[in-house]
Image (cartoon, rainbow over all chains, first blue to last red; front, top):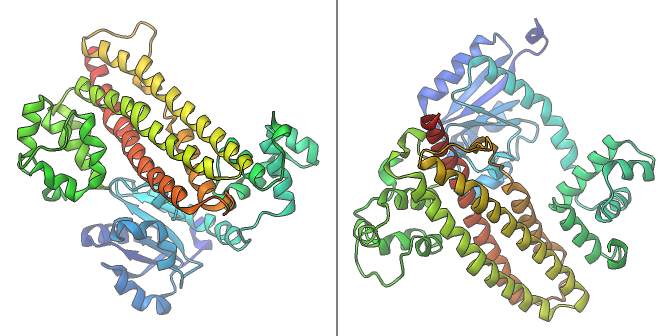
Length: 205
Length: 231
């Protein structure tokens, strides 16, 4: 059995509805010893008091318990558990920007197997996130070079050929550029390059 | 949750006090300020608009987790909804975007010439894209819905399933514009016009997000129901 390899991942559930919390516990129990629920809380404040003792690997939390303004900064709330995977429990519409804060999400209409699968996935995705976050915000020299190529309107293939790297590497640089600058479109990146004097207007016309 | 929603018996004025972003919504229903102490229901009857559609829009704008079930969408017609969406498009193109453009130009006027040009060019690209997107809905999607409401099936085999959710690129460009103003335009560009523009962009973004939400989560399911009936 696959799950026997990863035993006793500690799970905390922060969910105001007792019915939903019990339901989730039952589903996790069906997966055998893979997940061990070490606490359920109705309110985030109650969890915060116990968090250092519990040291969970996985935190299931209903995003709606946070005030609207705080939904975009849930990491601040969980900063004492930087290694835990955060998974949202969804039962209504949650803004996509708020959901991006989580490593994964489960919907209350998902079946048991799907929930388990999504939780495993969230655990697997987690290390990449922390790695990326520790890299800092300034663009590296390589990223600036790639950005200039993007701004000039080159395709990923062309950029890969010019810089002697794989298309896959180009895509990963572009992801990092967007993560650091917050700028997603090619024309936005062009503006960035122009304002930072990385290129001249004449080079893109 | 339900008991917190707006109802017909509330005063129209209280609605604005509860959520000032609804100031964008009222003109799209033809409702003008100066309505005194009349209730929402009274004003809707006076204007001959569907009170349940009006309330639905106001509730979606105000309560972030509110979304009705597709089975609850029978209290107004798809044509009522497209009329509102059409008025919204006209409002964006004739009022909101030109007003923001005026503010962009005010900021451009006080920036270094080179940076001003870059900003203006980016904004014009954004505004062209918004216009193109609305035009697509006006010339392809809405006429299709109109025919469907009359019981006529699309000759070209179009269906609402093809309704591109290409709001994303527009949203990304607006996000980029905000980041450029917050982070990357040099600080030689003056603060007050820059702040005003940013505040208006945040309001526009919220408003457009609700607009897309209504299209994707209300209009599309409603039209899917119509399609099933025609088939």
